Amino acid sequence: MDHEGSHEDNESFVNPSVILSHIINLLPKQLRRSTPEGEQDAVTLENCDDEGHASEFVREEEKMIESGTFLWDISVIPEHAQTLKKHGIIQIAHQIIIDWRDHSNRLNEVIIGIMANLCSSNEVPSSLFQTSDIHEITPSLTLRNILLECDDSLTLSEVLRLFSVTLYCQEGSPYSASTSAVNIFREQLVQARLKEIIERNTNSTLLERTSGLLLSLLFRENQFCSDYIEGGIYSAVIHVVRRAEHISSETVTSMLQIIEMMTTLAPMTHHLKRDQERKEIMTTMICMAKDEDAHEDTTAVCFSIVYNVLVDFPEEIDSYANEMKKCIKMYEGAEGAIEESLKIANSSKKSDHMGDATIPLEEGTWSCERCTFINLDYDLTCNACYLVRTDTKDVEVTWQWAADPTQWIPYDMESNMQIEEAFQNGDQEVALSKGWFKNNGGYILYLVWPTSQFPIEGVRYAQINRGGNLRMVRRIARNEEGLFEDVDASTYRTEKCMVCQVEFEEGDVVKLPVCTNHYFHRECILQWLKLKDHCPYCHLQLYRTA
Figure (cartoon, rainbow, N blue to C red):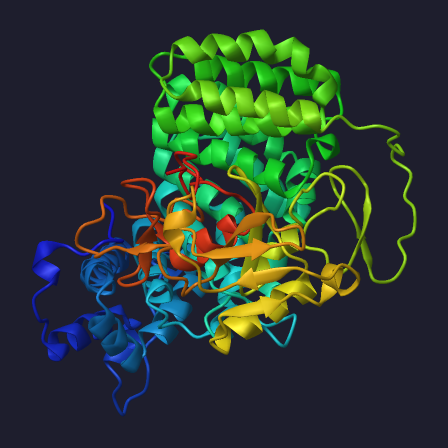
């Protein structure tokens, strides 16, 4: 039974006294009977020395499960979540999961589910996921032990959901997972466990929760790309995709999104160096794309992965071009995507690569992951191959100019700041003079421009150079008018963000104007659009040619 979403009978008001009575039922028995005679010993399976005590323990567990299930149901409702917090549910849940070995799998699942719901509604403080003493038992350490030792798929699903929710929160948020919690997933033992879950499970919910956790970690730190590769998780994900006929299409798509995210954040040369590995993934992706029964979303992600491989191994274009073109006959609209993949990959052929030698970088520079070109720190795009720097996703606002209607390039950091300052001041235009433009004057960016003159629907700004050539300009920001469409929580059809795979809360859910039925957290899709120019699910471009 899934308790993440609210049920019809939960929408009505629940008397706080009823909630309190159920909370009391979760308390250890001796605390419920606090008397002058003192506290009785708690009843656990370990001290049940006769049939009567064992029966009493079972009855206690059943009562706790019944009350916990009720609280799990209502904990998705913000006002009830606040009531639960007020009456100490966090501390009670904390104590129960510390003693998780003394309880049934069902009770553990219910209690962790309550905590995950509270985290989703921002009712759990970050202090519960931190430790100042390495020897102190904390929820994150307890959850780590459950992850490593428990074999119950329902309990594991809730553990992974709880970690995913806290990892999704922006770093620095009071509800964000601490560094110690994040570091759990750097441990080789934990990575081996995640690999085992991926390889040996066919439970769709557990696999989707695992993929959601992996995506949350990737969004938080790029270093996890290397960790996934070295820990064998990447290979395990490929293994799942290859046995697609045994798992749900949603699970396959979520696993493919991990592959796509990794190929976006790090060049394929880092993890597909061996010809055999590369051949296997390319063959798998093309076969899936050619499958007439494949979902269109799966096909789109497969094309994206193939494109990423060809960009980094352009010398292999000819080997796969014919197979890719066969897919054109099967999918309406696929021709443009395939041709674009081949064209861009072909134009990205590399020369004079420096092998695996590491060359010390000068201070104030960064090396492109794709072509190794050395760029200045303020550059958000490689000046050689135009790969967008991954750190760009963390810039609050980015301004981009159009090299052509299909390629948008971020301005460098200093120019970006100058344009945004003028925008915030309400200026109608700005003479670009920072960053690259410091030594290349004569460029004017117009912040007020008749959009009817643009061939791209929705574009509102323009840049004109000293020769009179006009370039379209756009702003990628949380509050940019027309970038997103707000979605009423009662109307969207999916429960999870299609980027981070974390369940939606009530409120900030958006979609892109170009596509339908694909919904995201605003911050997730905002970070994605700073790196990519399309919907991460259906791959329609952000702006269409009018």
